[in-house]
Image (cartoon, rainbow, N blue to C red; front, side):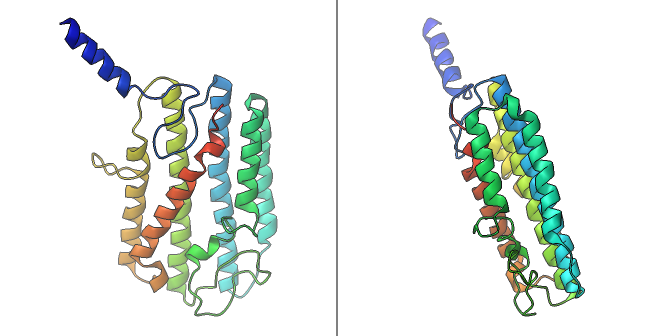
Length: 253
């Protein structure tokens, strides 16, 4: 009985989730927050970045609709408002953050909003507005990549794809925040089931994204650069990028 109990204790110890300050120990770099204040900081920043992504996506959507109609909109002013709201939320939680958290959040903000960066949201605008057949750039200034879709159906598809990718990014950020919260509390969490595919209920972030892809493709109107496989590639790239930057929101102490 003593040997059996010892084996059970060892097995439970091996299965224990990482605790405060420890690496996440999966495909996501970074560490579980080491203090309650740092956990609150990371959680607030994750929510702020999710709102930033959705806000910029709405700015790009407005710009695409205007360009298709032959008019224009002040997309830069729209993004500036989104950025101001983000920085207000960041500044509101700054007292709870470490210097590393604030510095890395600033680096992530710059990368997402600097149109000259190949990983910026402006550069990724071409992921959805990818068909060049119209020959008309969405943004004549060149700040925002992408092309005006050639038909109303193609516009609808591109707008839907951009919206779906933004929703996926938000969902993945929420999964990371839940993982950090649960591990900090000493509880296990199936981050992969939340983020990718959940065979038990089909409610993983990628499951829900793929369901939207299927509906969009079945509706018709998507051009070859936005067929089903291309949309799934966008999902893979999005999740990979957010996973790779996880240590910017959850740095190791």
